[in-house]
Length: 336
Image 1 (cartoon, rainbow, N blue to C red):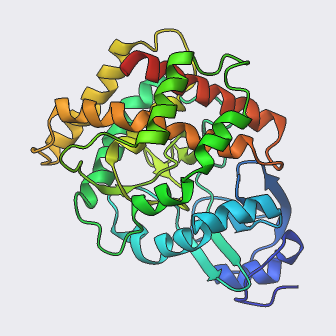
Image 2 (cartoon, helix red, strand yellow):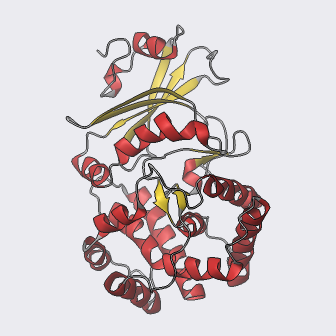
């Protein structure tokens, strides 16, 4: 059993006494519900018998380092546990963006461990992982995304570098691309595959450096809640990188529906660009944004391919990842 203020390393260590010490109020656990949302961590919703005084909810989220070797390897490859620990310790309170309250934050490198106790911002609210994210909220999301990016625009001191992510991807990208049946299942067209392969072998074209800022890296509706207009969670991959990565990643994870055309894509790009202008980012033209957007698209296939390749990814998640990969292929076909 985990003692007061010590981290819990498994669900059986999440007890009423332990959580009472963490929250500094007496609580009585009703149920511990495993959530299927974590690709590289073990996530639990802890239902309580009475409402908390520290928040308006009757549950909290406990997030731990996974016991599954493939998940731990991927988390370790990108320092995801350490990044999320550092985010809630040093960055969350500075952002002009709603993030969950963090009640407990433990990380240890050796042996590798993570334990977070977070506000449950999704309980009882629409979240993409449970139901389609409303298209009418696209403009809200992009306004908040612009505010996130404005906070560290070309100011990356103390942030992990995007280039470190690229170094980790390395040669494994091409291996993953060949291992997954992206052609036989029509997930990617021949043209999309050629664009991605060219990126893998040649890298992005040379031109003046694109702007960089704090990016979420996993900015998709599964990691949003509509609480307080928009609250964003799952910060284990943040870094200092190109803002168009978040923008394109969001667009490739929107639910497939009729009408996702080039014109709709350009409308979303324009909405984001207008939000940047209103926030005072005046030296980033729409033309340059579109160029950076096109260039980043081939890189985005890596994450779904890597997650589809993990033994711990179940069939339902693989279908969801396949849908995102298909969306990306459509975007490459439209823009490249």
